[in-house]
Image (cartoon, rainbow, N blue to C red):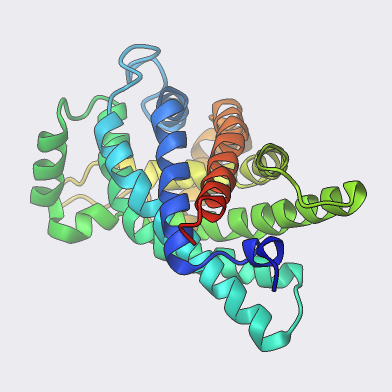
Length: 279
């Protein structure tokens, strides 16, 4: 097997390192866009949660969770994809979809606690990282950090189901057209296009996730947002269908730009680690 062929199937550790680098690059550079998206989607509204001020609130928690979250995703994604190819001796878009879904379930174990802390800071509920962590824990223990886990997974799986087969498919088509493997920049472009499409289509699930994570727990009072279907139904009833697409512009912009950085950093990290002889 040549180096070019092997490059397609990254080893677990290589995928972990490259994924960590790419995830951190995106979250660190595009945090303000994520803050705007969260504020627009919140029930209180954009201006009441800070408007354009303090767009770097929650930056520390976002960055702390980005590397392990992305590393968890890509290590599981690459491992699952490679295992399937060995079992079937072929490659199909459904393998990419299944592998990315497995990766998302794993990554959400890190992403959800990070998002709970980050988003509550973005809307101004807490003034510091330590306050956000201690207050969240006091409100419900470890379980409070996983508020919205199911909804997040339900958002991430269809997102990944669309994005990664599309990314792999675009790279394959581009590579066949030019008669050579796609470069890191070309792979990043494919990732950007795939991210734009998948993020737009899954915005309603993102809005539901945000509402669940931001709802304050009041002792003795029933929760307004319960479960993905229940939350979407509540939003539809009280605010109309357009409310399910709140924040679509910053979300699509964030993921389009982020997709280029994310996939570009991942492929460049992988390429560098291969060519320097580390793997």
